[in-house]
Image (tube, rainbow, N blue to C red):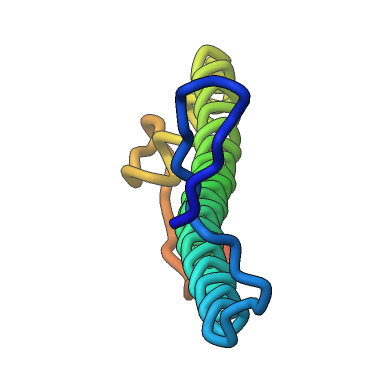
Amino acid sequence: MEVHKLNSNVSVLQPKKSQTPKPNHNNHAKVVHRRRILLIGIVFAIIVVVFGVQIFNAHRTYANTMEQIEISNQKLTKQKATQRDLKLEVSQLHNTNYLEKYIREKYMYSKPGEQIYNLPDDVKTTTIQK
């Protein structure tokens, strides 16, 4: 260390300044910079992977939900068609002529004095009134 005297009685100790830079210093700085860049790269890669997994899970959940909605819409369409058919049948059953015809065909009933002939399935049942 060098001692510098000022104009006063106080002396200040200062380290010697070396004129030549240390050859290890540049190497050490490069190693430190490489480590920092590697650490920052690893942290960035982890963040990208975590967000990628989150996006993938969100997309999969969205696709499953859309598939369930499509299936539900198909079921709803079928139920509405069934409801329309049932409403039509109820309204037809209030009609006396249709009701009589339906009972005759389904339950093989006849009016007094009628004869019923059963024919093969491809030909409808024929009734003859006397």
